[in-house]
Length: 310
Length: 310
Image 1 (spheres, each protein chain N blue to C red):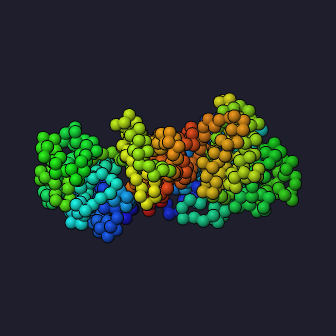
Image 2: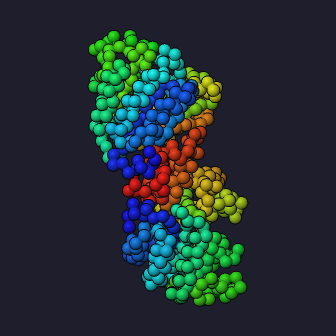
Image 3: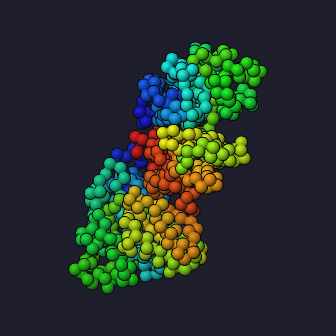
């Protein structure tokens, strides 16, 4: 369906699944076509990274239709991606690593939680894939943080699942799917996937900076970060998830990284957004750097003209 | 009319009239109500400045309806504003100083030129106000630049108009209206009115910086600038018009001012946008300061959802 049709939908849910395949164009396109072919569902964007060996898709749509398309896409990934032969920079526990639902228009977080449970149940039953509910959907506090659910990755999953007290899945079998592994499904606020590239090939430096800038290291409250090597560029990057871009803005993350990188005499050579991000995440940066005193989003002519459109 | 209705209009023209009244709220509101009351016309925004003693309104609408509303508003300003008692920081030649039309949606520059001529003709005839067509509507090269048309201001207008060879008006009488003066009406691209406030009360410094940053001084190609004193703040500002924000972006203007201000040890304390500006003018700044490598405006989720809306 087209953009104009989707704006007519009364309720819009977003889904940002991460597939553990960033190199095989045919596999990625086959999965993308599932979303392209559905009524009341729109594939907004996808980006693949060969180093991460990962593809992130952003899909919007009517909740039920989006959920069904997502279940179908996970089944297709189960056919096409064999985790026993998958390797890449980015941690993952399965062929589809994480499936977050985000309430976008006329929907509440509880609607996203309900949809994540429906999708998780169908995936566990239909494909025999263990499903962990995470973040707002988590069934226990130790499962809220995706990093915890993912710890040990695909390779350590069988061992991890033996600890049934902590890691019995919410849906599906109590052992990994032999070629898929497991999947984390959940509900969350809009997240900005934002990477900062550094003028060095020393992964230790990116890791050290990531530790300083992220929440668990004493850094920014809504920042998750890790160092990643970019083989193709012979550089390293601080790869971040900003889980609340209004409280931990992009400019704060990049300026804190610049400050820490200065310790090593390393420059920030560039940054990149993965997937999509809300207009406000960028307007807040323009406002900060331009030192604007009177900024309001309705100073933007398109926003005034479209105010009631979204 | 509301935002949703105006989006249904097939053609949208914008008008950004500058009224030489920034202090008397009642006068400004009376004029604003003219635009609020019209079919197929929408007052998007207005801002008044007491130091400039000037109000800038941004109106969008169907061209014919917008033109008629504009003629009516000029007549009301002629009743309510007496230039013999008007004083302010901002140069002006009349109670309504300048009336630019900007093609916004499904319209060409020639449509804006045609509308400016219709409005100019009606104003000259109906109110006996001399009208100068400027910029894309100018009837001679020496009238393209608004600063030239405005030179001498209201106080020097009678003398200036004696030079009939150069300053015979395009419409209306060959002498100033006794209380209104004259008005410049024209057509142009979207313009960003952008002011940079400095941490000093020395107007000479703002003037010197303005001379360096503006086109005629050897500065940025699409930048007009002047120094303005902000009495209320006890500061000065470089007040700019960026006539092509894609070729002379906001970040280039503020960084060049910062660079020149450093010569005096003067900091940039803040900036402000007057009226409205296009989203791209701000996204370009976020992209520059964040050093984004992969920026495209459709990374913004609202833009992907609304692509065909505008």
